[in-house]
Length: 90
Image (tube, rainbow, N blue to C red; front, side):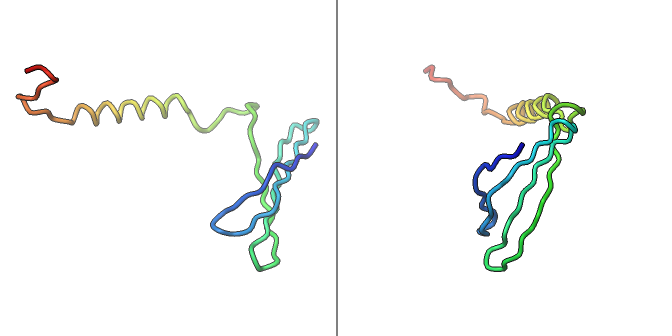
């Protein structure tokens, strides 16, 4: 199975159409991409392997969110307010 999914633009260079190949029967999921560098006539072929959940993901999103929340809370706690600050009450 293969699909063509659009056009890429990277660092002002002309890019070719992206063609995706997915081989479902072999359990090998592959994205193939061909790019042409602007004005050179040279083609670059990249191969990207993807993980659709058959292996454990390397990036832990929940842990990242917890770390970001902690950073934000620490930043808020570092803010010092003068003792005479008012919240709209006179």
